[in-house]
Amino acid sequence: MRIAFVQGGVGLEAVEQQAARLSRFSPDRYQIEANPTAGARQRLIELLDGLRAGDELCLASLDPLHLDVGDAAQLLLNLADRGARLLLAREDGCDLEIQRSTSTYRMLETLAAMHRRRKQAPPPKTPAPVHDLLTDAEVEDIRRLAGAGMSPRRIGLIYRRSPKCISELLCEAGEPAVTPAEQRRA
Image (cartoon, rainbow, N blue to C red; front, side):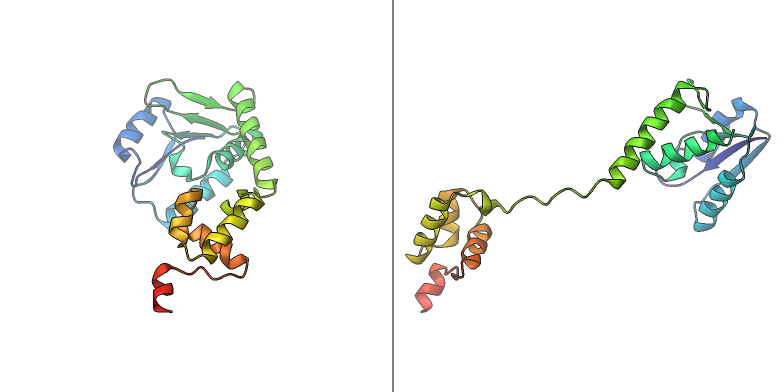
């Protein structure tokens, strides 16, 4: 069975335009979801789960899937592995067919594998605080300047660091970051 799936919504092409483009595939049935809702999402999932060998799904774009590239690639691979075929009616007239025997299938395998590896990779390390990039001599000089009453803002201007960075550095060392206004009050 050849099914055309059309979905409206913000950022998507008008339902009428999608249906007109999909008509060149002569679908047996149209499933049109003019207003995407939770129910529409569930019906799309049921449609995708129900596709079997020999079935064909016609889409005007992959946007109604609402998946990132890696997950969309994996979904399309799963459909192709079940023997279903995806027909994508592109606006430029160069339609795309995805089934196991196409080079597009091999590209999707590559994208899905890359996506799986990225999901399994440990999260990137958080960058070191900016003040960790200062030398010991610079840290000592910053402490000396703060001890002499210079504000974190002025010290930051000298060392090209934010006043917050200088204050954090001084707090780590157990020294309060005293501003000139606080000195005058004392």
